[in-house]
Image (cartoon, rainbow, N blue to C red):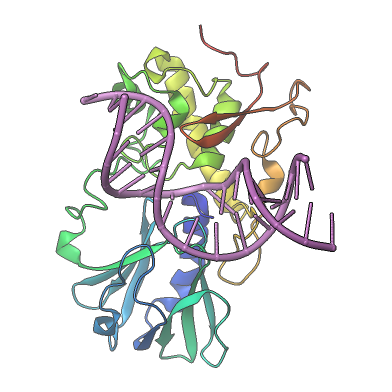
Length: 274
DNA sequence: AAATGAACCTGTTTGC
DNA sequence: TGCAAACAGGTTCATT
């Protein structure tokens, strides 16, 4: 479900409703998601100070030193519902708040995961230590990208989806960003010129911001915290459009598989390297 | 080291 | 209609 824009939309939906609330009870309906759940009883009685995001991780900063870290995997969803609401299918964890609402976590595929960390271990924890820059920060620039991919022969699409290069860019936004820059997804990243990489970093930023403003992309099941869909999928230029005409030149959009993932691109607008 | 593929698990769509 | 195969937004681990 979520790439960076979707996680950010969830964060923005949760933050004003959850910040300042005290956790009164936690119900875990199974011992593990992708990994064993942390001892969530330890968060009971604590107040949520802020809801932040790093890469695709949601960070619930609690009063004191604890940070509840949550990754939505492919199909994770948070909903804020009245505590009396019966559990929906695939609801695995429920966090009750002191205002009569509960933070409900649903995840059909259970690729999501959670951790309870101390503030001080955030930067060094395995989930965070090797992460590259946030694409919406100043640290992510053409110059940065150039040094990050220098000498690399891997396809540019694989590298912009690599969290060590830049975080938050998943399959959809990788395809959309490459289309908008006219770069063929199979281009060995190290072959790209500085100008192209500067363009690519700008375009990635712009696509992500547009998607956040549209409320994310609702492919099959992404929904915002209030249950409403996001609308960015209406703006896809290539993702999921194989066989349909390119919106720029009319050529049929192609689908190929790179590292086991579908890649969509326009064979005319995105010229293959040689 | 770098690149690829499989695995995790369930639901939905596609094709015969 | 029925059933099996293919496919899905992410990350990690094992294998070339």
